[in-house]
Length: 548
Image: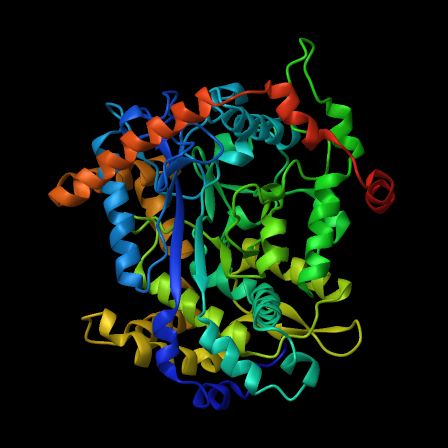
């Protein structure tokens, strides 16, 4: 997308803005539990929070100490953030003595032993053991430190009425004759490709990981500098979480999974989950005692191992894999995964970020979205790394495609402002549709858009710049994070849940524990037998030839 699409306003003029009242959104927020001494918690997931395996809103991610909070879909940003706040409040009630929630994407202090990063435990059922084994596999493949990084995932869906209207406006008969399900998937994949093109903008405006605790890079090569004792950074960095120090899988990149269409995406994902990878084969499947250490030696143990800044999603039914669900019912929503935890919010995200992400997603949905070839993907990868490490650098230039496989250099801040100007009509129509959800004097979406404009014009207003300033003033990453943790602990002590909400959380915790016990009582086959289907190779030869 070298220049913003000029027909956004024209398209919006043809759409009934009330359709947007049926948009749905949900948030997944991750946060480490930290001990009073600043190190990662070594205690088990608090029983009072329920069973991480079966609880609908409070679970764990990679580590037993890495909480994940999940909100149900709602039709209001305000409602979503309110629910997330309540989840935090209930959690704070039941943290072990002296613990608090770490409020940064990059982790709190980790000691020199990876084994002291406790892997999440989910009980003795086959499903629970499977989830723990998956995490053991991540540990042997990538190390445990990488898995302690936290983020915010923003899930968003648009109503079918919108897709039906857009399809009616199509001049291409092939698109016009698609089923609504296939057309919806087609448009969501266009959104995904455009979101990939907008990643530099997302990283600059929302990036909040410009520095890290020195302990995170123990034993790793890096190009970071010392900010203050114990803290490493790059002077103009924005989101180190999204760069070389974040989630990396070279095997996945070699496979070249693409987002040009649903069938191609599914083929790539399935190949990666069904085919062995020599480096992972060399690690072994079991330890010396015969205990499994990874699910299999495939490029991906399971589909969720695929690291991506955005995912097409469909809710799986019983027995379905994510790809099975997508093939059966198409794309239902997108998961925006390129968002750092906002340390200046007690819940890791605020209404400005949520509103901006929705504005951006609508802009990406409505804009022209040609397929991404290998040359453009390589350019996008270079741009991402550049903005991760140097995004606030004055006069920074990024690449944009011209013709063929050639690119040209453009001024980064000018490019951001062009993109923001082009998406302003999207903010305006969302305020028309959803403006009643806020009592603020200025419309929610346009207010968020204006804030991003201010950040684009003055890098000192970005989250990453503000973080570096406070990190320096307070004496380092841990001091900055600990100061925030203390503030938020006090904040939630004063946030009282209603009696009904308190009861709902307590009931959900109790029911989740019962559900886990029922799963454990229903286990009729050994875990070794349960694991066998995941260790079969169905497309080994084609995969090996593709990635060796």
